[in-house]
Image 1 (tube, rainbow, N blue to C red):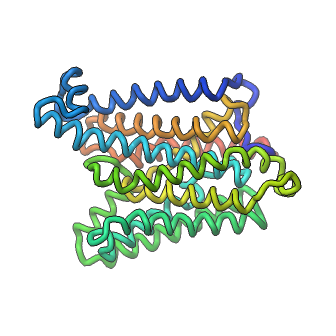
Image 2 (cartoon, rainbow, N blue to C red):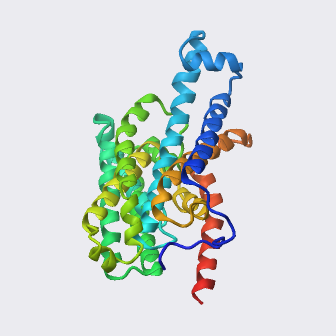
Length: 343
């Protein structure tokens, strides 16, 4: 399999990457404005724009700048990290089902963050939260690449991802079970469901540098993924430094996904869905997939966050719950489609 395939291959005409990115950026911009509009307090459109620049009354400025803007920015950053990492992992592993969630990377990052919270490191040193999450994500990614080097079959990698996720869930449950503070247990449980609600610019400033560096590293993988699609032996004969590519992919995924998980919790299936939705539009060329997947991922998570605010049934639905409800049927559909093509 040269590129991770898609059921709609050949049914959708490819478009220019620049045109696609412009369209996605316009969609993302519209969603960002919509996100600032939604909340418990109705704010006039003109006041909303002024408040974004701190030119409205103090209460409106506080609502927009301290509550809505951090939530909007985190949703975009988390979505971009998941979309880009999913595109890179699918190209690197030649696996159409690869993404941080299905491969256990998100679960490992969550475990690292829970360890930082459980032992009190996050309370005394806020920077420890993303550092623990990124380290755990890096270890999981290294393990996956080690197995893929010897046996990169789709089923093997997915089963390994299930195993990593299972261990992460088990250790997280152990930490919750042994926690002497019931409020800490409740906080960890809600955090694991994934959300960008009630976040501040402290979380934005904490995650943004790591996510930005991670995205740059992931974007740098683009040209090499085209060569790698010819096969590792052929790629080496053409001068590709496969080791350097793996370092960029591991580092970028660990930084971007780990930092995102540290501030939002687990938001699943975005890295699986977005590359598959974008791939037919870029002619199944790996180098053209990463940037649109990142922008589309940001738009998808932001749209999901808007939806959870619009669903007024009981407590606010957690962001990670909604993405899982959407992503699980999509994952099952891909598995069934892949099995039919391999039969």
